[in-house]
Image (cartoon, rainbow, N blue to C red; front, side, top):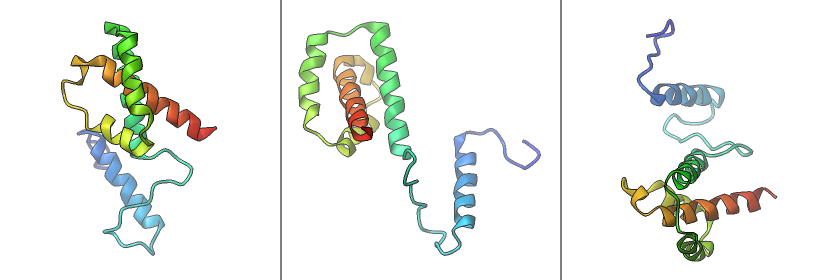
Length: 119
């Protein structure tokens, strides 16, 4: 344990500390309310989705993928909006790496939509 009583049991400790600080800074808000996501920052969902993108790209580099299959799968994801793509990425099964082409396609489409949104 550190001097301030926080241990290194995981990221949850710092998340709780950050939430408490947010609530102290906004006294008009009730403790039961979820703090708003920053207007100009990246949401936790987007951070997790971007982490998935990096995992998918790293996995692709390790195992190699069939680009034709990836291209076909990208067509399936192109018509979906960012929230739906994020939900797919964050609800992937534990064995997602067994079908890397599908997840690489999802990662590419999601990364492209993030890039389009910021332009």
